[in-house]
Structures are given as C-alpha cells and as structure tokens.
Length: 340
Picture 1: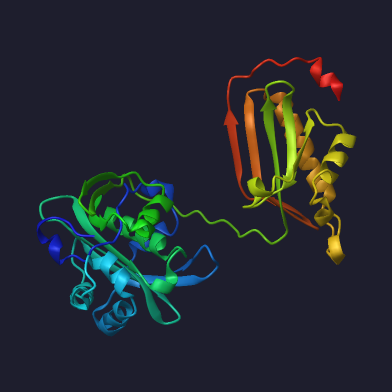
Picture 2: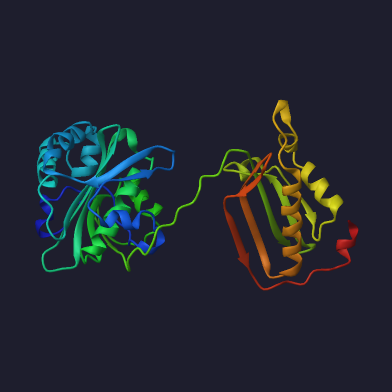
C-alpha cells in the first residue's frame, strides 16, 4: 500500500484497509502494548511469535522478502523489482520512533510476516504496510499482525491507517474483513485508496478454551408460518447446508419426540457407536433439545435459534456457536398442530 507525500517510501500494504474497531477483537491487548515478544495461536492450531523489529533483524527481514514470489512482490510494492524490498528491509530495521513501529511474526526461527506503520506529519493518520510469506497465506498471520498494529497505534495517538492497494489483491482485503472493519475507499485506476479509522482502545483479554473433538451436530428452533415453532436437529459443521441432514418436530417436545428426533437424521448412527466408536452422551443431547423446545414455547418472539456446531462426545457436549434472531410473534393455527 502506498499513500501521500512521504508514502512513496512506504512499501504498499497490498490490500485496502477497513476501519479498525479495536473493541471487536480484544485478543492479546495488554501484551501488544508492551515492547516484548508474545506467542499467538493461529486458526489452524499453529503458533507464531510477534515482536518488535530490531536493528539486528536486517538479515532475517531481507531473507523474508527474498522468499516472496515476484507476483506477491508486485502486489506488495506495485512492482516486482526487488530493490523496493531491499529498501523496505533497511527502513523497518531502523530504531523505533514515536508514531513509527514495525512488528515481525516468526515461526520456526524465521520471519513469516511483517507489519509497519508510520505517522503522516501533522495528522493522526499513519501509513500501513503488511506482508506475509507466500506459504503462510490464509492462515491468520496477517490478521494477527494487524490486530497488534491497531493496539500499538492507539497508544501512539493514531486514529486511522491510510493505505493504497491494487484492486486485484483480494487476499489482503480479506485480512481487514476478518477483523470486522469498516472502510472508506476511493478507486483510481488499478489502485484503491483506503482510509480505515479505529476508535477506542482494547480494554482486556478474552480467552476461550479450544473445544475437544467429537461429532459435530446442529440444533435449533425455527418458526414455521403454518405450524408454529419447530425444533431442528441434525448433522452440523461447515457442511450443514450442503448435506441438509436435518429433522424437525413440533414444539413442545415429549420424551418420545426427543428420542425420535435423535434417531431421525441419516447420520444418527454416528451418535450410537458407529463402527466401534464410543456412543455420545445421549442424555445431554436430549436435555439440549428439551430445553430448546421449552425456550421456543416460552419465547414466541424467538424467530430462529441456530446452535452450530454442537460437539457431542461420550462425556458431554460443547456448544461452540449460538445465533438467535428475535421478531414479532406471528399467530398460527393451533388445530393444524394436532395433526401430529
């Protein structure tokens, strides 16, 4: 990404920036503000360390840029000429100064990502530049670096990042999307000029345990226009809509309804010891469905509840994600429900 007057010297970020709302992702907030190394768990289970760039990192940063493909160099610097990369390596290894920071992500003793920003003179805006090693794309490295840069920029009194990107560089655009940011953009030929504002400061750290493996299921409630509230159950996970292995029963559920619903999906054998596997906790699943049924009856304005995935194991279950939607309750014909 490139920007205004002195930004010609700033390596392009390679993607548009979206307004950074720091309250959206409070991870590692306190560690970022301190100039020390922190370790971060990525979405794929790998770990990287993030720390400020030092003057003696020049060889490592240069090797990092040498490993970037010509195509990604072009997206990064708007040119495949490696001279720009050499100049960038020298610049980021300079001592930090107020309003100018550079952070390095490392894995296995080598650099896998780099983010830098520098305040624009006389403003509360800063140029932003980000690069990720080719083999580390789509693994969360860029998102982690950007989160840390946002926290540091707030402590430097910076209110916005400014950057230019080639409009074809979709990967870098996704980095900002992953943070749930808003952005103002202006298109100028093949370039996108971006202004991303962030408000407030990170106020804490939120840590969640990682759910253990099990059978991924879906459970929920929908309001049918004819029959009223229905309790849904079936195979969950990322392929829920693709496989459509769900069953439904009218709420409120009886004990027999719960039993029938657990065995209704085509994938139900996975719950009861398929091919020697240990059966899941059927009682816990039954309680979950019964409570959803009670919720649907007690809260008629519950238009939709989506629990996916529900990870069932022999010793219980974990509800990893819950989404609910409320809407004014609609009347339904109680006589149609007697058809059950």
